[in-house]
Image (cartoon, rainbow, N blue to C red; front, side, top):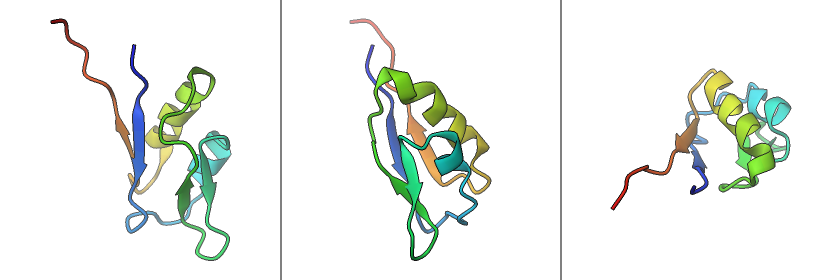
Length: 73
């Protein structure tokens, strides 16, 4: 099973900090602007549930979760 890939849209971010509180090993906030910083675009298994939750609770939708396509050959 492939890992999900994360990306962020800093222009869309409003600096609420929900991501950093929900998944601190995956996200942080820029100390100058308070905007999201992506620490790990391919989080290890131990942090994937928190990363998915952070994407879901982001009030501005600035976190994009790219799930690997499942399909057989």
